[in-house]
Image (cartoon, rainbow, N blue to C red):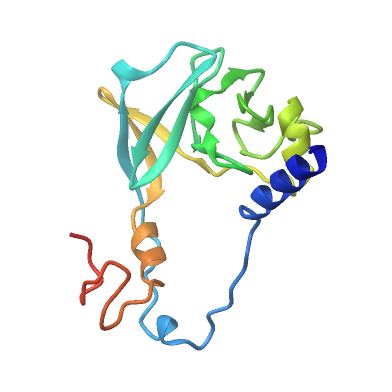
Length: 182
């Protein structure tokens, strides 16, 4: 029974492992590349900011963003998806220049997004899952307040560039000929 549970956990975790596919020279790459465009965009209201040592979530330019407030009240913006299983980082606790993933126990540096030394998947469940994946950090973004809004600098063309790699033909996966959403 224990072996079946362990095998199930390994197979489930492997489903989230990175898989690189080379698309060089395909019709997907024939169109012109969409260039990055960094812009400050609204993310959350200053009224929605938590107190020191906590974090909240928001969306900026289509990206899930974690807004963390350190013990001194300084704001940091990080990607809101914790590796390796993408649970929200905004549920974490902020202290000593880092934010800790509440499920797997990983601590991420607020300034760099990198995993703090020796702090990859330290919880009991994290030790099981974390051993299956290489340690990886989260993206960090410049952040500022403007009036009553917290703004985060993101690539506003990122989603369009990513989706430009989708296949679109006579009928796409949703049965539409133009590849667009409803």
